[in-house]
Image 1 (cartoon, rainbow, N blue to C red):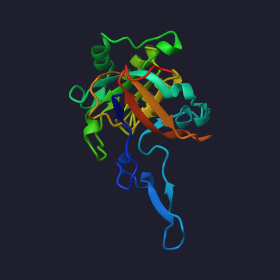
Image 2: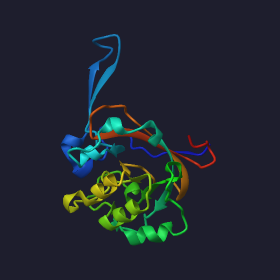
Image 3: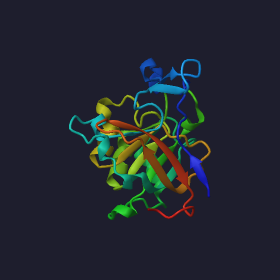
Image 4: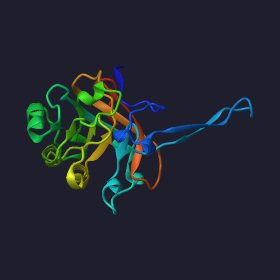
Length: 222
């Protein structure tokens, strides 16, 4: 079985969005073998730290919250597109048209839809880059029109200081889920089965997740 773990490792030195202190995870040992018979740790972490799913509530006041993520979304076919040397700043509709011209991602039937994962220079970096590669408004519009299932990117945000969060809004309004904080450095471009298992948390706008890719013939799509 060919399997790629494409999740960020949660640790004290993890890269966080804009290097903001409040987004850095805090580990606190609440019990150790000096004061008790067990070892226990408390984790205080922003839900948008590391690999995570953005729910519509993140952008829309009346948007769907975390409990609306269905288990069926956790298993999907996807295609990894490599823009690491083709898009240094923004991934645009033109970039996507060139990469997807020979790949079928659109589907009118639910099970035919695919997710699109965007591999960029971001996967090569272990620190936050304020000039990270992102998906711009034209690219989001293009993908929304394609009736795809979801979009993932190897940045801690799918957009970079865009007015009014245009990329998020275009995708989420179209019912396309967003996964941010992927690690795709060693993943060759191509088609895979994406397995994403978020924590089962109710009533929040984002979900920390563990994501892996399986080669297409490794297992049947559920």
